[in-house]
Amino acid sequence: MAGPEGTRSAELFARAQKVLVGGVNSPVRAMRSIGRDPLFIGRAEGPYVWDADGNRYIDFLSTWGPAILGHSPEAVLRAVERALPLGTSYGAPTEREVVFAETICDAVPSVEQLRMTSSGSEAVMGALRLARAATGRETIVKVAGGYHGAIDGLLAQAGSGLTTLGVPASAGVTAAATAATHIVPFNDAPAAAAALEGAAAMIVEPVAGNMGVVPPRDGYLQALREACDRTGALLIIDEVITGFRVARGGAQERYGVRADITCFGKIIGGGLPVGAFGGRREVMRELAPEGPCYQGGTLSGNPLATAAGLAVMGELAKEGVYERLEASGAALEEAVRASGAPVHINRVGSMLTPFFTHGPVEDYADATRSDTDAYGRFARALLAEGVYPPPSQFEAWFTGLTHGDAEIAAARDALARAAGA
Image (cartoon, rainbow, N blue to C red; front, side, top):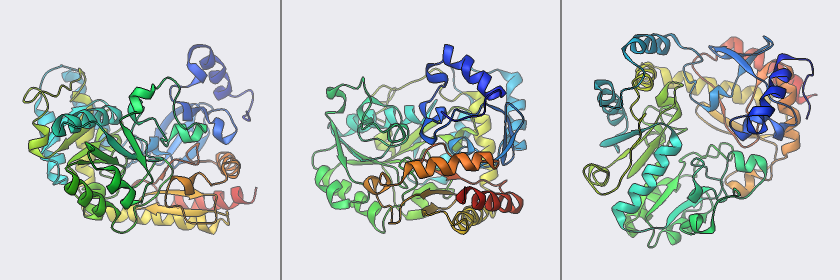
């Protein structure tokens, strides 16, 4: 692997490999797919991160999405500081989690009741169990390249780290675990409709974010809604990435569709570990203690996480926020285009992916035709120029409210140099 020797990051990585598997706590962080060793981050503020050697980078990874306000935003820091002296965890109900749930229900009309979790993956696990309990059916329909967390039953043709590592499914997942998972192409409504006969639910990222950013075709999400209504299946919309990012009401607001169950994560935690799932009242009441479907967690509704999440959602409710996010995403897209890199760019709001392919990217098969070696060279060159992109072709780039004109201008110059490297 390429990477500067004699640096603090190199020293830490050598130590990490002795005590952490692969030297990391999540595979894609190893940066193997872009042909180098990982950077170790020392601090982050606004649109920047600094590595352990003090080098500064314009950050378009944005901690995989949550840093929508920028890193270390004042509102979040103050909220956590106020909450911290009151205790870090109670394992009991709090007023703040009620306000948190009210805030989400107010923003996303399809969510009438909510259950909090500690991660987006946990939210998806709860949503799948709930859908099966509510329908009395077993089969779940998902799209090829759709990633919904490291859940055994969904780690078949998943995106994110599995696509980055070039494996179709994870070792250790039994055939029985995936037997009730039916896979269809993204953006193929007829295939989904056929698979939904007798199924419990369809789970979909409304904007694919883990095969790289792939937007829905016109009418695709509405067709899924109609197919679920016709077959009695539930529509689970995974808004772990898109929730509160592409609109205050998420992709459901942006595209005019309504889920039966919605999964949230990332942004709603304000950088702390949190997730949630919610939906129609009659469906959610299948959960214990009101119904027979069990789901629980010691850290669900954690007081620090809800404090941070409420601070973020309060800032995102301010006038003009999503216009600014749209503008920053468009400015980054234009900067990538201007670089001359041979890419096709997909963008929705403040999330985008440059694919090293000449044709359009509308599904997983299209995405995997991208030249990953070219992306790796581009990403390494960008890091050398002080820009931090996702260390994988198959992830989203994100802008936030602190990516201003100066950062975009500096990124434009860096992108042009990287494209010519």
